Image 1 (tube, rainbow, N blue to C red):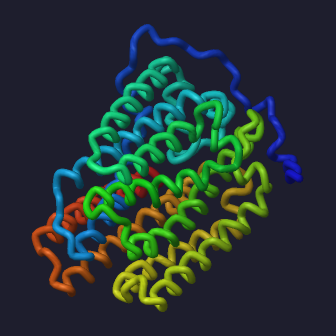
Image 2 (cartoon, rainbow, N blue to C red):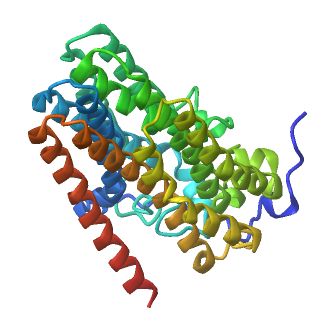
Length: 361
């Protein structure tokens, strides 16, 4: 039996924007790039890099070519998803007047910068490119995992499945970002999925589900108005907050249990556990009602840090694996490449943080 919608989730005709598309005479290229939401692609460096780091940690040589293919594949599928989502989420984005820089879409279709058909066309082109990338992968396990990633990413919002409209969107994101992409990368390197990678990714996947629930909390009014049943819409605001809060200690307890079982080296555990203060901060913000009133000013730092909490714990996992591999005298050249990728992520994240602080000043 479904949960009743709280009054604040009922359709609100005052806030819903229902004006028809403004079809531009020609494509606005700045708007087209805005649709890609390129800043979110920074995260992809981490699960792919972590998977390759685990491969090197296990004694396998680094195959730079397949590392590059795995990274390009993740980026292609991710951008495809953005263009696809912008088209099929247009009604929900129009209804959303509580959007933040991290939620509510790029707004490029809503403000008429780009015709919706252009977004859909770009999605189909990228779908074709990602399918070709799947075809050139060298083994059936890699192709099957990559195919699953493409299919789930497409049907995240596309009909008839529309996973994010049926309470499965949060889990789908975690399965792809913290499961299938690194699985493809490590299978391309080793042909198998090491237990270390599974044990490290499992708690980050739980935090990814919680992070997506935080993002959807900010969209819950407009989502409910157009029949988009994300988990916060289905269970209601307060139960959703309780689920997000509960996921934080469970994820770190899971990581600790895996370390006690010997599946995760203690050095990796220590670096990942150092991100726990972000969970504490997030819990405090949610308990203080930062997402309750749909105030973009209060919501923006919460969705920013909820999103980057997941990024940082995966970055910590990658750092821990690299350090533990170095301690085991793994291939220094391979570790240098992976260390450079991680350093590049840290530099870009620091720049992003500087821009966020400057914008809020």
